[in-house]
Image 1 (cartoon, rainbow over the protein chains, first blue to last red):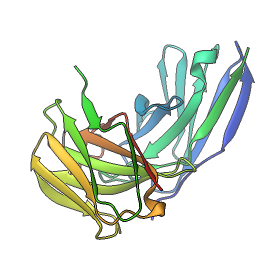
Image 2: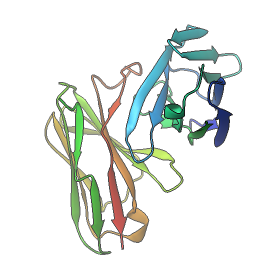
Image 3: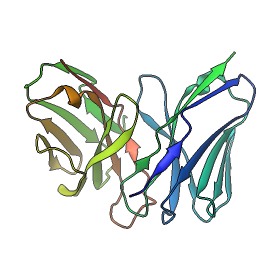
Length: 110
Length: 116
């Protein structure tokens, strides 16, 4: 079945850039997603990228997609303490069920 | 104007009890889901319903029974609760189902279930 993997933890200083990486095995999906989960809260759709794009920029967020290597990354520019959360990449694996990575815990130090 | 809502937000109960979690979406979506997030924050699909019909059942024990009275609601009933059922349960909805993997799923706030 589909496997989506992320590193577990990332710590950055406020104002630095954060890069959260994700690898996946099923490349048939039309879209790939990033969700954000703040402490004690639900999942919030952060951004997504169409699979025929290499890059998508949305304000401080940049999503990079390398289909050849099945690698997805989320870059947060000028990271703020409010960005501290768990970030999940998700792949519909060509269907409708989302397979989630294990989540990357981003800690932003002042 | 909450898009996907769940009740209760917290649920603490004894082993062996039967409990229900309710989910409602006001987005006019046709498809609803239940996900389970374990203590390690791993998220897994449990069920998917499209137009009140069960589409996906991902190896979930029979003690879990989803019920969809209408397109806007998908409730999760759990019989004979076990310690291992302790988790956060998320409801989600999307506009369409099969073949439409680009249909974004919107999540509810989660229900934190603790079985003692």
